[in-house]
Length: 111
Length: 116
Image 1 (cartoon, each protein chain N blue to C red):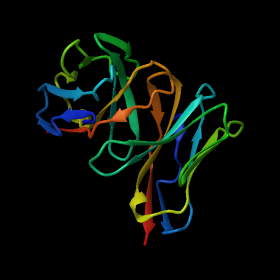
Image 2 (cartoon, each protein chain N blue to C red):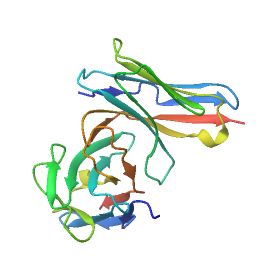
Image 3 (tube, helix red, strand yellow):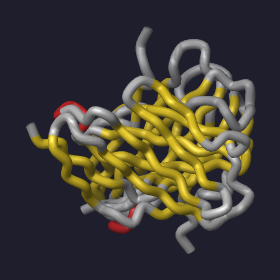
Image 4 (spheres, rainbow over the protein chains, first blue to last red):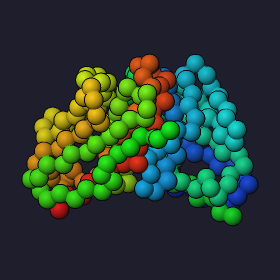
């Protein structure tokens, strides 16, 4: 039973365009959501988070949107840059310390 | 300011041997978390520890796996009598530790365990 799902294993976009990464969850107890970025042979790096009391959080080129009724969140990267090419993980928490991760989406930004 | 350190980065063991994975949290961090990543999958939570305490071990297999975070020294994830299915990347993360849901976890580079 996978509680956090990233249905697109990969995404390819052109440099300068928008990248939209999607994530769905099933556990209504989740109330804190995070996105991580991961390069090969490295650990995940925290990107941005959102609490369930919000529907949008923005940090520079990165914006996370949360639709609680649909149990869906998305990460928008605008404009996309080649250095953004990595695996992006969505994660959700219902309690301190324990995050449930999706399987990741590999983003490729083409110059 | 050094980040989360994990060693070894790569570990090869034969079936039946023991594997010990070490994690030194960031300076000032008192909370440690262990995750496992199988190929083509996301990270799976294993255990959450504070100094000398296990807070949540709901993701730990019931047998062969144990974790500790002593008062002094690194956190240790120990796998006894390894089997091929234990081959994975094991990531450690740490946080400053207010013990709240919004604590940001900072990840180490991982230990890649291969069981022959």
